[in-house]
Length: 123
Image (tube, rainbow, N blue to C red; front, side):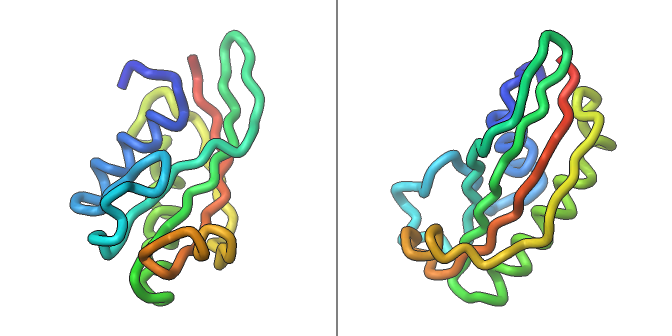
């Protein structure tokens, strides 16, 4: 994967790993027809000539609370495994998924858990 843009890198990685689950950078226009999807949001971080240290918020949407939580746990596990699968990613840490009330109110899926994620990407 040639891009060092962390949002594009994570979006492509999760889309490949999650198979049929839509992964986007905003709530998809067809969201009302989707039972699950993930939205990758930049949430700050720092950058230098050699490293990108992004913070991301991964919003995991599903039609039930249980499915949203399970999707969030799966996304967190995939993110922690990313350094083994992407040679440019040297470190990923995630916090426990939490119920995101704001994202939940904006989603047709009805339920959302968010996964905070910090990364180290070598340029």
